[in-house]
Image (cartoon, rainbow, N blue to C red; front, side):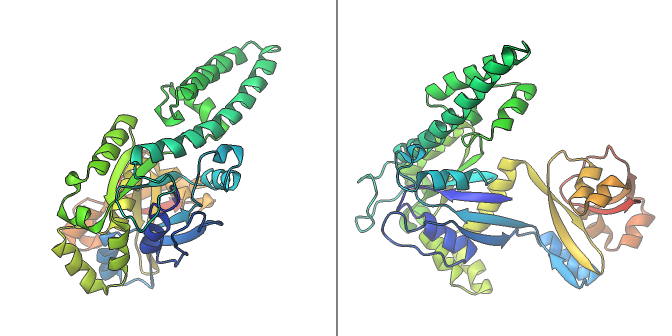
Length: 364
């Protein structure tokens, strides 16, 4: 999973990136501090791996990972090449989802590029640049479809669909809010649009607001309402606080979070929201060589899930021996689970569930 962290200059984007990845990206109070994207890889927290490691005493424990990309700050006109425009947009094209950091705090010492704090204006600025970039791509695709339609009338359906999407863009609406059938989405997704990517609005607050109660922050309320209307997600976060947490020892972190009344760090909450937004789950493999988590899309069937390990597993799939993590823990050993009939043999149509522990049988 690859997540692009975007935002206007001086909203706390790089500070948040540093805090959640500990990658040490440069962070400063001036625009375009981030020119080339910084990349940080973090592990997905999964307590189930710790439990399985105790059971199997493996040589290796491998959690799922998330790749965060800190993309250069954007300004108006990026779609026309302003600032670092084209470079910025090409980096967004490579990510699975966008974490849009929005400034929801006042601080006279940190200059906002627009001169004032207005999260909805900031959201609109970036959204509009993505839409303008998409319009250029869409217009080229419409021209191509019209030429093809002269020789084959079946392309008229595509022209009608894309012109309908063009009208949607003209209203300032992103592709992800467009209503279309599954077949129509197959055509749209082939265009590689930017505004179709799922978005999480990370509302960056001051420490005081975040600790005392996020509902007292009017900026956050606006972002939350906007996200709900758009079908996106809003995540309250404090980049400065996350940076402070980073400097603590592991046992101190847990105590600090407890004092703040938080169950999870901002990173853990962000990953959880991303998994939900992208429809991702994890299945597990366990044995003496390795205990490992594998990230797949919800609804994926066993052969395709096996292919995440190796293409041969999918190509030569025979069956999957499956037990759910909760059942194995309740039985304490795999032997006991088998005696109770909780280890099942599943075929090609089995839909993998989050927390399934699977041994794939294959032959190539």
